[in-house]
Image (cartoon, rainbow, N blue to C red; front, side, top):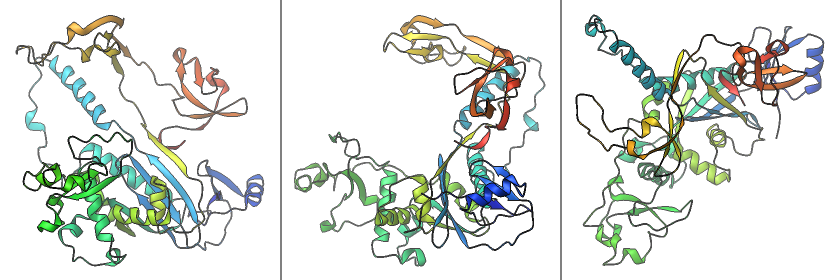
Length: 444
């Protein structure tokens, strides 16, 4: 696969990337350029130059946990990447709320502040978890536009087009791809609604990746429609001709209809897609179109490959993908509580004491759940509280130079007297030279 060096002009504007590695080395040695970013490798010119660029298209496979991106020109792919988003925001907000409630409960004479709260939310308000995902999408797009002269952006906003299902007469460029495009859209809707699993409660298919098919509950011979309420997901071992015959369960389903899963539109992508599409020079597409094109091209299913197809890639020369991971910028919690550990007598595994609780939720109420304390076996460790007294300079995932080698920091030990590195050495922090901090969006 091709490797590119990204280039910025003297003012910081993105230029076309280059493969002239010898010239790049000479410019860096002669101080005509400087390194701006390690991965993807980016340099900035320190002299005036022309700013001729090509039209580049950025394809984005947007999602709740992963973002796939690909930048293509007319002939080749210039950048391919995948970002793993930060997870656990809801859990940390819940933990913060618990600490706050506990702290306030100790202040018996604290004056009431209920009227100080703002009950009405601003227009366009999102829950913190969704807002964080949306901000990360925008930040990642801006980062890519900072190193490449992207002129057009295409974002996949959902697996299917719900408007197309409700009104098949909708026309447009996206619906002129062939007669089967409407089928792919409807199929993705049903699979997504049924969570890509066979809906037969007595299914005995033990395959790791069973072949899934769409079944008409009321047969088309009996005037069954293609409406989503008449479609359900079955595996190929349940969806057989024998099960369609009179007396079998698929035939009985026509009168005793199975309970269908409810699809809630309040998912992440349906919540934020219009915010993403309203960005400058952005258009959108749907997952069923991407899947159809990817299968036609014979490309493996990955987030960055989907982004390549979204950007309009076909027979373009590919580049090696770069993998990014988002980590917390800062942990402001000064006090941490570590629960005691016990052996669960039912499974023999080590669990936290909170999992084997007495069953009560409030002191004023009687036991309203099963008392699990009887399953506590041997105590492995005591519960403890720790208070962080200072913040050390080197944090986990930071990149540092040690003895001429580039190493990753695992953590700080002995109250800051030594730093643990991934090469199993624990040097003095004074012997290290920082290269890149491992917070935020970092290449791995």
